[in-house]
Image 1 (spheres, helix red, strand yellow):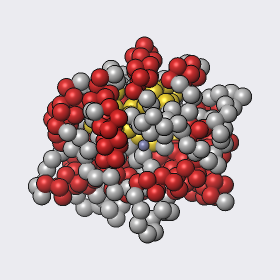
Image 2 (cartoon, helix red, strand yellow):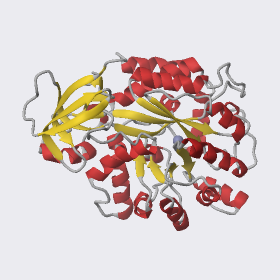
Image 3 (cartoon, protein in one colour):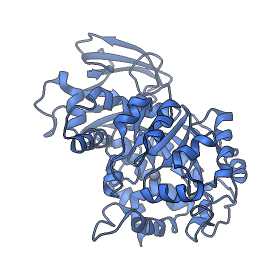
Image 4 (cartoon, protein in one colour):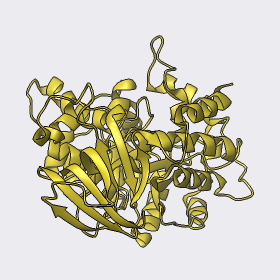
Length: 445
Ligand SMILES: [Zn+2]
């Protein structure tokens, strides 16, 4: 709707669950939040359950969805998994990537995600030849998000080398623009849309030579755009960086002006105390991807220490082993419980802030992630009467959502005032499982 009212049976207002809340919406934004509205006003769209601000999936590689359920048999490491991932990357075209991303983003909408940060590095044709439109792949992702009804921040990723002083391997040639300057020239051609913002990324300190890091940082700084970077996911990256530069990846980024409040380190798993102080002290964010980190046997990052040092937390489903932001949120807390053998590191409210307002801010959507006048009208409703969520009192809705619900409990998703998921059905992509099955089959044939 462009103008109208949603009536929320229960609403999460950031610090409490409030029964009976009317949200007035106009031109894609919330214009009023009215509490104490016991019954739906005439003509209002009724959302039964607990309505939360929309969830931000701050770290995604859409094509990894084609690997779900595979690469689980036998042993292996992050690096052997990467070989299988590259075999899928080799097959992507603008058309097949569009079809897969549309289905994946529709799956996200069904999981309550209203904005995705797509960490995008498959830029060119296999071998590295640019497409006639050099941004054909990025544009395919932006179009896919529009068709799935969610917002996207395209984190266009600079990826130039296989490792320190190593040219891209044959899989990686299509990721590379040759130099950070050529990367910047291509990125400058990308256009923003109502649903799409352009951000940037440094794939990792392995993939961008130190002498070119500042070029990416300057491009982001000039546009006040988000800048994301995979950081210390694997100890091998730290070892190689120490051997090449005599300093940790975090220190290297700090020395080249990459850290700051618009920058987000993704994973931030294997850090020194100095790294944590550098990230926190600069206000650099941390995006944890716990379901992927456990799937790939990465380790558990020091999220508590990072947040305490000043690093805001966000969450991402990264490789899409599952797409479920509730699971990401509780996994961050539960990992910490297992590691420390104590409970209660984050409240449900804090975890929802990571999945909501702080995740949106990491993607450059500062005006989303809260239910308040002026915010984007992006929200999602979790059933409180499913087999997983029935029982607890509604006032414990935040705890129920974070510690018991799954993506399957999402009943409604509204983006910019538009009802994208209604009663568990996607209104723009009618058969999401079939769309996923077809798109994945095309890439794994
Ligand atoms: Zn990633």
